[in-house]
Length: 288
Image (cartoon, rainbow, N blue to C red; front, side, top):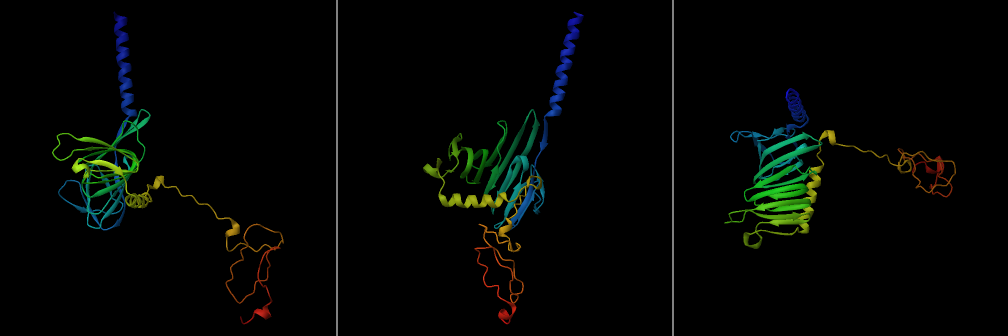
C-alpha cells in the first residue's frame, strides 16, 4: 500500500511538471497595429470610445482601440502575426477588437477580430494554423478569412482576390445567418436575390483597382521583414565602361565613355567590326 501511494504521488508530480512545462512553452502575447502610412487625409483613434486623438504615422495601437478616417483619409496598418496588413479607406471606422497570438506546441495560434462599422477595408492575411481565427464583423454579418487578399465593406460586400472567405450573412428579417463561401476571383453581394445575398465573379474593373490598392499597401512592411536585393548591371551596359582597344570582337553593344566636353574629340576606336564614328583630329573638329 505504501508503495502504491509513492507511485501515485510520483505520477501526480509528473503530471504537474508537464502542466507547468506546457504553461511556459505555450505563451500568450498581445499583438499590436502599427500605422505604417497615412497616404492621404487624416484619421483619429480612441482607446476609451470617448476621447479621440489625431492618428500619426508610426503610432502603435493595442487591441481595444478604434480608428476612424475622414472624407479623404487612408490609413495603412501593419498587424504583424495578426495580419499582416490592413488598409482603411476614407470615411471608415474600424475597431481592433482582438489582437492576440499564442506560441508553443510547435505552432502559432493567432486570433484577430476586427469590427467594421462604416466604410471599407482591404487586407492581406498570411497562411495561419488550423486553430487560428481571423474575423471581420460588419453590421450584417461575419467574415471568416483564411490566408487571403480581400476587400470588405460595412454594407457586407466581400471581394476575394486570393484565398478563401466564409461569409455568415443575416438577411433582413431572418432569424439566423446564412453561410456563403467566397473563393478567389468572386464577390459576395448582400443586395443580390432581393437582399438574400449571392456570390458572383468579380468584375474586371473592381479586381484591377483592388490589385492596385494591394500593391500600394504591400510596399509597407515591417523593418525586420524588409529584404533589399541589389543586382549590379552588366559592365557592358554601363555608360562609363572603359573603351576596349584590344581589337577583339564582342557580341555585346559597344558603349562609348561619356563626353563631358563635346569639343574634345574621342581618340580611341572601337573593336574590329564596331562603328566608333569619326575619331578625327583636333584641327578638323576645332570650332565645331
